Amino acid sequence: MRALTVRPGTAGTAQLEDRPDPAPSDGQLLVEGLAIGVCGTDREIIAGDYGTAPPGRDRLVLGHESLGRVRHAPPGSDFHDGDLVVGVVRRPDPVPCGACAHGAFDMCRNGRYTERGIKELDGYAAQLWTVEPDYAVRLDPRLAEVGVLMEPTTVVAKAWEQADTIGARSWYDPQRVLVTGAGPIGLLAALLGIQRGLDVHVLDRVATGPKVDAVAALGATYHHGPVDEVAGKLQPDVVIEATGAGSVVFDAIANTAPYGITCLTGVSTPGRRLSIDAGAQNREIVLENDVVVGSVNANLGHYRAAAEALGRADVDWLRRLITRRVPLEQFTEALTAHPDDIKVVLTLS
Image (cartoon, rainbow, N blue to C red; front, side, top):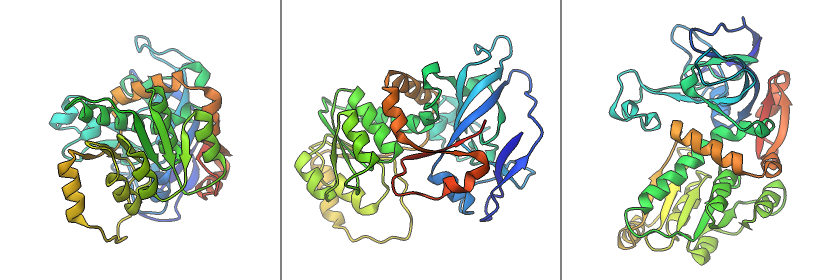
């Protein structure tokens, strides 16, 4: 089989390798890899900025946004040959910490978790892979073309869960949400907002193109003006922040409705300085009972919620989010961003 691998910590080492077909150990599923999504984390690993190879090895198989079809399911696994599946990214730490012991490995307290395609476990960018049934999630067969969107959907399923959990501290009846950033995370966050029956607004820098069209097709409202002006007029009850841009983050936080909730999902680039009035920001957060929360990764509950959300979505709309499909052999093309990209996918089979 062919697999896309990299030497973590060393830029320019991504390459295709011929590897022996994996032999599933007792109880594992053998899965034919169909596609993987390419995201910023993958690009950082390839650039040598991030990632850890499995113990005793110097190369890591990439890919955490998976999609595959079961080639062999062992008896008693609750899976069947031909099932469409994704593999969960994170695994709990071996101690385990209190969070991991309770199934919340996305909230690991000691950092000893592992992650497929990122940290100490080979990923899914291979024509065949194996996975434990407890860390595989079945998808509706009609999602065969778009199921690779599952992992980013888990991220926003968790973000919405966090917002709802915080909102439940008091009377909570959100009406309007602002999503900042119209990449895959932002658009999928908007999808879940629409499914909740909310008045959804999406803000990004571009004025035309597939992002604008996708927002309109979803039934949400698109904006491309300054964040403080847009958010100031909207006064959103919830902000899902998906850019990681410092000025966007702080302008969004400063312009929510009273006891507004801002959930940060975008990871900022360090080293960029920004002047803010910290006293005024603190005063507003305190006096309006606002909440700012960070959210990353997902546990099994979020995967199941994401699978349900995708199953309810319009597949034609989901297809809009995949703007390029690149064969595995041409993986370098997938790593170069194009202006109209939303989600770039590597096809494996």
